[in-house]
Image (cartoon, rainbow, N blue to C red; front, side, top):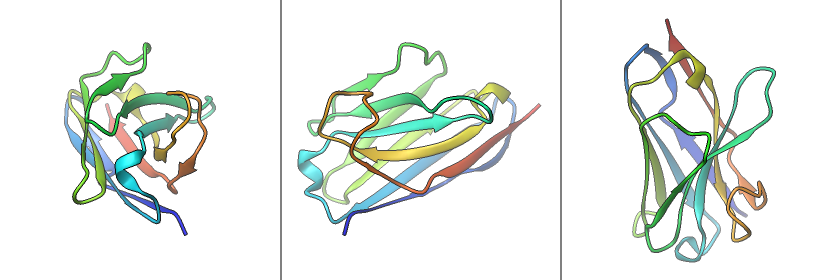
Length: 119
């Protein structure tokens, strides 16, 4: 059974930082590109970032925020460091494991973690 469990969300002030983590089990982690998506209220889910099995990061074209994705293959975790957060970054953030095209929204999903940025 595949499980992706996110943690690290919460309420943060404008300009603050959060670090999201996702722990994976039930997959051969080292073979999977791991990504983060987010869905804001009333909006479609959008791709944030993906990190390839070799650690090379890719970021969505619409992403202007200073986010950094990373992974630890030994621990089977992927992280998203989010700095200089803005209210428009408020969303549910989802961890994703997908061997398909980057940003295609396939593969496996976590349950999501809420990030709220206060003004």
